[in-house]
Amino acid sequence: MEIEKKNDLFVQREQLIGELIKFNNIEKNRICSLVGEWGSGKSFFIDKFIERVEQEDILKTSEEESEPMTKQSFKIMKFDAWENQASTNINGIFLEFVYNDLIKPLKDGKSFYEFMQEYGLKYFKDLIKSVGEALLPLTKDVSKQMIKPIDEFNNMAVYKMLSNTILNEIIDEKKFYEIMIDLLFSEEQINNKYLLIIDELDRCEPRFSIELIKKIIYLNKEIMKKGKDVNFLISINKLEFANLLNGYYGNEYDTHQYFDKVFDYEFYLPEAQNKYEYLGTLLTKQISLEYELNTKISLKSKEIFESLNYRKLNILAEKIENKRPIQWENQYYMSGFDPAYYFDITRFIIEVIKLKNFKEYLEIKSAILRLRKYNNFSIVKGEARITFKKTIKQKDAFIKDISKVSEYFKKEDLNEIGIISNGYLTQSEEDQLFTLISPEILCLMMDCPI
Image (cartoon, rainbow, N blue to C red; front, side):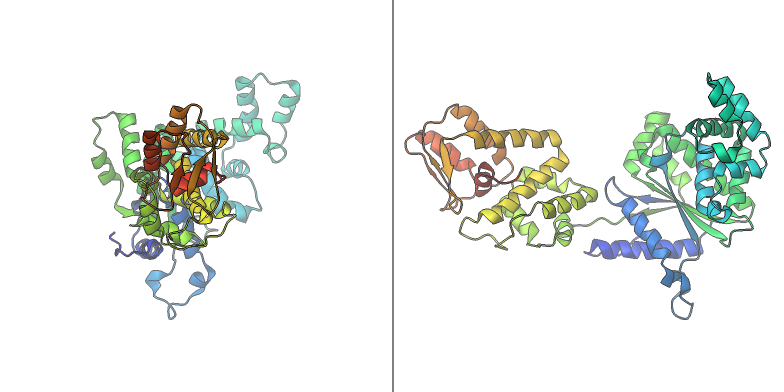
């Protein structure tokens, strides 16, 4: 669904929450996708969506006080595929998820395995011992434990492992759908409509992801036959999931046709049009971030920053806030050399590089640490000037390290930036350094945190 384009990312996503509420109030038995890049905030958005529709004031609002279309009329369940992909028993783990969410609170905390025994799998308890002895060389002590009542044994790791094996054999496909529908629409449930969200599916191993979607398709068909109402929302990175499909079925597989057949609707998570503005809203000390960085950082740094996803932008904001021992004194670039101001710019770039490419960060850090070890120059805080006191040993290495760091900052022709070589540099070396050194590099050569 098209969301009205606005500058504020949060307003756009708030609109999408409203659209999803309206959609799930109207539609039924739909399989939809929430599309966004990795790190764009899909999981965060889903959590906020769930919080929104489960707020008490929404649940208790009367129709006279609010439009019926904007109120929640469905129960939401969220299944994290990434956390559960290690299980070889998709049927068992998916049933257990629904049971724990809907039924367990009504059963005084009774475990899923106990519930399954009561449900009618009459050989469940006996099979624990027989299957266990067949699968494992059990000691006498463990064998004795295996025949204890389930309520005393259900927390043991061996029990859980064997229970999964047993469930995998007992719960065939037909039984799986029967039990799932019974769980969703038992007499104990006051809900008659559900939205079942599957998150992190595109990060999972291909077999698990594709098999889980197949189960959702068949489950939806069985629910429709029963005249019941469930919608599904699957969160995916469409490009990565297409790659997953090609890896599973082959490069010739038509992924576009797959998406068309599986998903009834696609909801696209709105992205901020301007990452500078987005990051600026996260910082407690706000400056004209886009202006400052565009005038201070190189094209290489800008490209690295703009390649960060929104998850990493949140991490970046947190790192900047936590590494701010010196308060900003200037909001805009002044003629004087203000180390406190430049420290913030340099910390920002170092953190951006670190988030994008840790190897590159280590190379830059090594170059900076090598520069700090030289004792043949001095930099006075408050003066954007480097003074050489003796001959530089390994001049080529020294200039190479400065060149490495200078790739990330713009060199500005500022009168206050100076190089006093005192005869220890040739004119060509002095000219070369002058084209490389910037206030940010001088800060890094002093004691700017890295």
